[in-house]
Length: 300
Image (cartoon, rainbow, N blue to C red; front, top):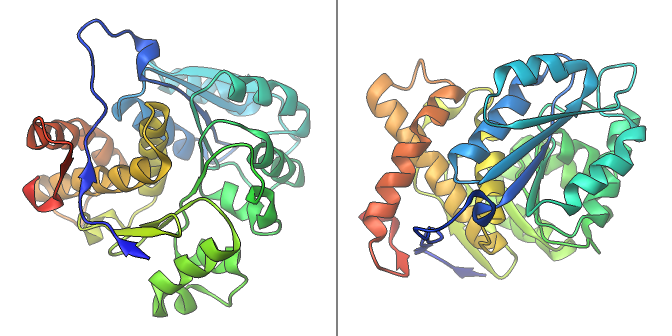
C-alpha cells in the first residue's frame, strides 16, 4: 500500500451558501442506558460542519435526547422491549437514509437481535456514505459480508477489540502485534475504508494508508470514538471522498484532543472536551491550509 502523508483541504464555504449545501447527516444511535453515545455523535457532526443533523433513536429514549439537543432534529423510532431500535423501524430508517448525504450508525445502539438485523440491512442497502461504529461493528461481526456488495461507500471505525471480532481473531493483542497488517488483511476481504483506532490511528482503503500524528493518552476515555464517528460522517456529508473524510476526521479529532490536553491536562480529559475544542481545531486547520490544495500535518 502507498503511504499518504498530506491531508486534503476542507470543503469551501461560499458566502451565499445555505444549510443544505453542507450536508444532511443522519445519526442512528442510542438505547436505554446509552444516550450519551448518541448525543456525542450527533453533536460532533454539527461541530464538524454538517448543515443539518437528524438523530434517529428508540422512542424510549427520545425525551432524554430531545431535551439535550437544541440544534439536532431528534426522531423517535419504534423500539424493542429492551429499549433498542426495533425491526419495525426499518422502513422509516430507510426513508431517512435516502434523504441524507451521509449516515453514522452504531454508537450506543445495543446488541438486540432486531437491532442487529437493522444494522446489517442498512449496511447493505443505503446508497449514502455510511460510518459504522461501536455496536454497528458488533452487528457486522457475525455477517461482515453485508458490506461486500453495499449500495454505497462504507467507513468502519473499530478499536482493536472490535477489529479482532471482525477478523475472527482471539483478541486485541493479535491486532496490536501488526496493526497495519490487520488493516490490510481486512481490506483484502472486504471493500471500504477502515479506521483502526489507537495510538497512530491507521486509515486505509486497501490501496493507500495514512497514519495519524495527532491525539494523546487523555483521549482513552469513554465517548471519544462516538465523537470521531460524527466528525467523519459530517465531512463525508459535505462531499469529501470517503478516504479523505476519514483521515481528515481522524486528524481533526486528534487535534481537538491535543488542544484539550494542552489546556486541561490528560488525566481529566473527557469526550465533551473534544466537542468544545472541535471549532478551534477546524479553525486552526483552515487557517493553515490557506489557498493550498493539500497540507502537511506538521504545518498545522
